[in-house]
Image (cartoon, rainbow, N blue to C red; front, top):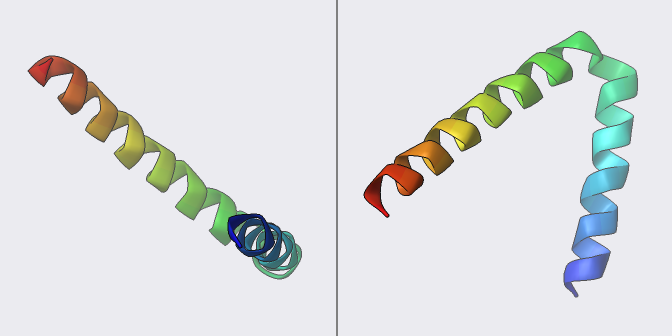
Length: 46
């Protein structure tokens, strides 16, 4: 089930990159920054 969802999400991601290009890249970069910030917060609590 998860594999199918993942393939669907990757396919949608590829389509979005084709249509929106830089907007998606900017959102992904922001998301990465938030994830890294979250991970660094978790590391501080360990």
